[in-house]
Amino acid sequence: MKKTGVYFGKFAPPHRGHLNSIINASTQVEKLYVVVSHNQKEMRRLCEENNIDFMDLKTRAKWLSMEFQNLDHIEVLMMREDGIPDYPNGWNEWLNLLKETVPDKIDVVFGGEKEYKKKFKEMEPSIEFKIYDPGRTKYPISATEIRRNPFKHWDYILGAARPHFSKKILITGSESCGKTSLVKKLAKIYNTSWVEEVGRHYNKKYLGGNEDYFKLEDFGRIAYLHRMEEDKAFKSANKVVFVDTDAVVTQFYCNMFLHKHSEMVETFVDRNRYDYILALTPDVKWVDDGQRFNSNQERRERLHNHLVHSMYKQRGFYIDKILEGGYQEKLEAAINFVENILEGDE
Image (cartoon, rainbow, N blue to C red; front, side):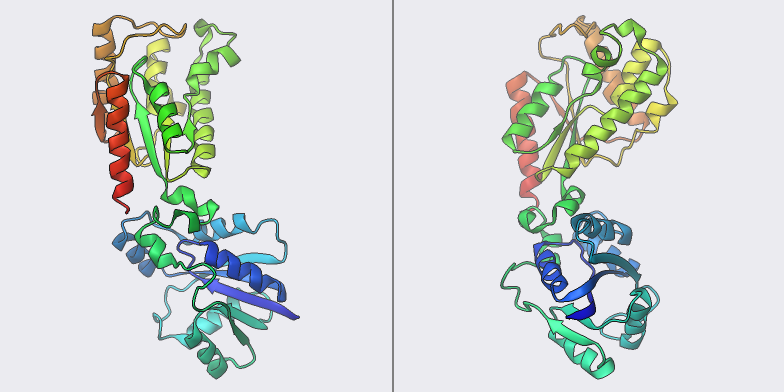
């Protein structure tokens, strides 16, 4: 058995073909280094031409580290290729950079490209190059295909990388407009995760059920706990994930309860966190769940306008669609909106 092996690539994104090849390679060496290469200019071009979020080097390395964290003989390394000639030129520079990146003497390099085998034999004969499944017969997929259409090839994307491609849809609005009901129904329909509004249960869990005990720090804690719930839901999302309210709504209620502004809550306001925002109008019947106090319809509409057309706008958010009508109308409109998103990637 060879002592040290290397499996290299951009992994943009890492997929099941990569995973299968890496695990197979790891059985043939004592130590396998998975080298994630990066060229800033090239990666930005690949992401922009496929209209996907930028995949930086540390993010891609993190995805692979998460997948192999329980396999001690597999270690992920990062290699920046900025400054060396672009492929197919710059072989000498690239090989020197690879040897500098890997801390041990390299015995074997694994890959799927036949031309790489010829180059290694010519330029570095001391390092064996092994080709594994060059025709991609086991997993007929490439990162190029995934970048072009992530949803079509969703099952091939490694779990750690899926949150990068899932669409985060925020459902917002003032109280008793149907947010929670809609989010739950959409999550069921699309067999995916969802985020419940933490503030709905906070006072029962931490304040003994009495909203009079709210302090400024409680709203900061609500925003933090909500963010943690979002992170959990994003990890298990199935193409889309639905979020019931955000930190802007938490600030909205902080203003309402305490007539104060929370700087801590504001740190969790992030207009780039969600891909789409749907705002619900307060035109369903007001429901008294023991935590609501704005039953007057005129006031409900005024609060809705303040939240949606003032607070979000002031923070640079863009509301993609206003959902009006009863529960059925809002559900149908939301489904149509999501279907258009999914079909757009078909």
